[in-house]
Length: 259
Ligand code: NAP
Image (tube, rainbow, N blue to C red; front, side, top):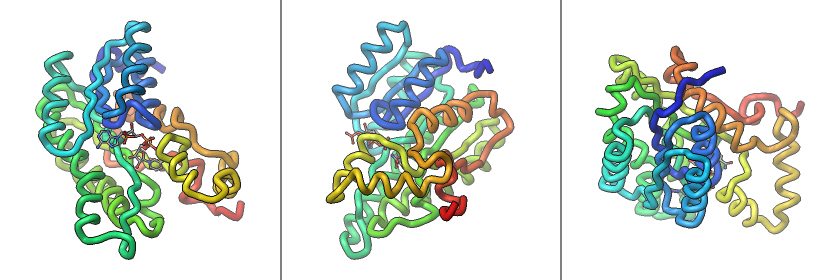
């Protein structure tokens, strides 16, 4: 299937590592031009070298999205380099464990801002360009938004907010033909996930326990499986899909775990 995204320009927050890296690579494989907003200098640098050697046009903005000014800078740099923006993937985030009993009200507010604020900022500043091209937006959320996890109120509030914003923006942007969807991972091996796993006494045991509970294939979802779904949603091939919350999780969230 030709996704028809050749030469289109996509912004990916957190696009140098984990799920975001896989999205950047998949877009590049399909001939798109990628703008990676991610502070990871080493990983981002390597990815850019690889892209250059393959003739992929790309831009790395080595910044952490910590406020509207960085989002504005990223959008302006992307437009200055490529002269168009066709889509935004809001992906950057971290489960920072700020809960009712292990965080202060100030920590909670900071966690929500850290995980949700830049989802709004990037879309807000990219919107004038997305309007020109009937762009597409994908928000990466988490299954924890619908299942809870415990001890992580800030992250969960942000992840739930991302799902609500997906519906809200899908409605608000109908008039421009801009589609907005969310992709919801559950268990994907990434640097973030590995850090979390390593916080247990026996990470290998914990991983086996989790894999056993994933209905389809008793295995983790691959970052590439998330990326393929995201890239499809960014492309015109999903031209009548908007406001959808897609769980790419091997049935982990919804199927009977006794299976
Ligand atoms: P990851 O391995 O930590 O990769 C995320 C990348 O984003 C890192 O390079 C990180 O840099 C960067 N980043 C973090 N905050 C940023 C910010 N404010 N601005 C720009 N870049 C930022 O994470 P991941 O596991 O791929 O997760 C990606 C998304 O999937 C997140 O939204 C997460 O909530 C969601 N998710 C993941 C899983 C999973 O199983 N992995 C499950 C459910 C949902 P630093 O490392 O320097 O912070």
